[in-house]
Length: 68
Image 1: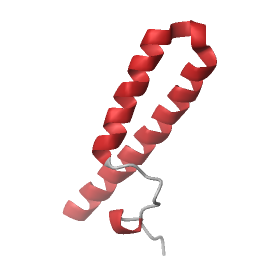
Image 2 (image 1 turned 135 degrees about the vertical axis):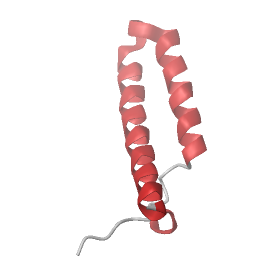
Image 3 (image 1 turned 120 degrees about the vertical axis):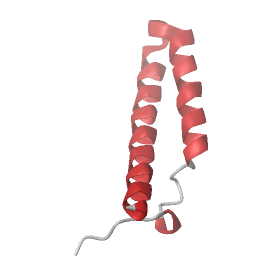
Image 4 (image 1 turned 180 degrees about the vertical axis):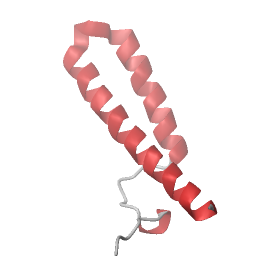
């Protein structure tokens, strides 16, 4: 049997939906502002954005599953 994680059992490091969206926007602005001159920082920020998007996608899927 496969268990699905819910908000009440989510890992503590998982950000709230709104904070994740805000962080993605802040990282996007940093990448645009610093460009290729700070490639390593931009690469790390992009990796964080990917992680946050995956967390948001999982939360949305869980909400859809619960409402179905």
